[in-house]
Image (cartoon, rainbow over all chains, first blue to last red):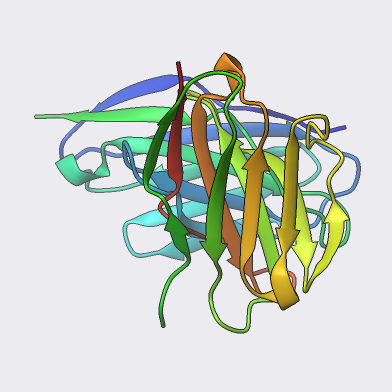
Length: 110
Length: 114
């Protein structure tokens, strides 16, 4: 089976940096995904890691360590519009469906 | 490109009634998924189609839920009879076959069972 853990809630200040962690246990691994979901809206794709290391995309970066079963999403220069839930999702072997964590609700305050 | 279309956007029904949701994926996307998202939780897979065949329906409560994908394009998800615990957002997503692509989700159908 698969188990994905991430913090339930986080709060950060506008302009700051925040790191959202995700740990996972899977039978087989073929990629880790981060999604952003604003309240009442569909999840939107942010990033994908399949190899160890850091992937940077503008203000957002995602890191993966396969040996530790660990990933984080780093958000820089936080803006109020970044207030949302951030979902960590893992794909097991092959092209199996993504399994999602419960999400981290991020509140950005002034 | 057009996104994943879902309808209806909202639905309220009484328990024991039936309901159906519709999804039209992105053109050319072979794989289609239905996820159930209960408030405050992450999406949970119900069923995965590749073209018009079922790949994974291990978490679909088959005594009350059914799904089909017509001609490998549109899909419908049905619940009959509905229970209170079925209140959730039902998300449809699609992706190309190639590994490494994230899914594109539709806006979802918010179902309330009273």
